[in-house]
Amino acid sequence: MAALYPFLLFLHGLTRWFVVLGGAWLVLSALGSLGRGGSADVAPVRTPWKAYMGSIHLQLLLGLVLLFVSPLAQAAMGDMGTAMKVRPMRFFVVEHTTMMLVALVIAQWGSVKARNASSSAAAARTSLIFGGLSLLLILAAIPWPFMGEIARPWLRSW
Ligand code: HEM
Image (tube, rainbow, N blue to C red; front, side, top):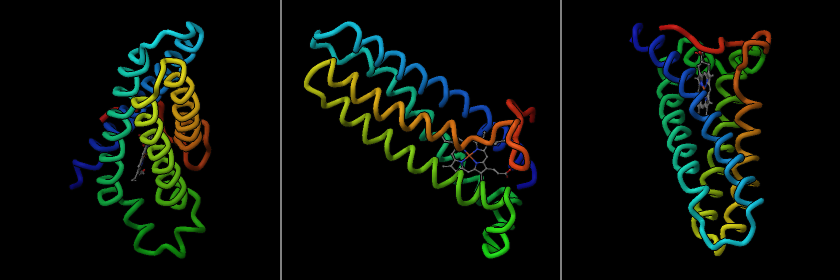
């Protein structure tokens, strides 16, 4: 268990970059296909959606395991009253987790809507709105190195 924690933190911190790059790829592809206008091809956003959703699902899985393995999360869940007053505990167990789950639901919803869209313009519009919104939420909930008490490194070694 003691060795699993740093390894999971390393993986969860690394996978964040696949999520961010996947989201950026999706938004840029959607913008590109909006610009191209009325072709009936829904394909331009299909592969970016697969990359984005795959990395978010992996991140969710790692995050869920971390909730049970992280000493910080375990201490927080053992005494939620105190945890709500301690910024890093509240952030990781409540804010980070909730915002990421909401982002995942929005992204999942958007990927299904885009897949069933009737034209490439509709798929691009849906991808831009749902993909963009979920990516913004994710970017806001990542503990970036400049975030004071909750700061985590750009990339962790393990
Ligand atoms: C797209 C989704 C997510 C992204 C991009 C993300 C990103 C991150 C990052 C960058 C860290 C810091 C890693 C480090 O210290 O090197 C972190 C920590 C953590 N995340 Fe996530 N996360 C996501 C989803 C989740 C979810 C859904 C959960 C819970 C179900 C979760 C639970 C945690 C926990 C418990 C920690 C560790 C706190 C600690 O022990 O220091 N994460 N996350």
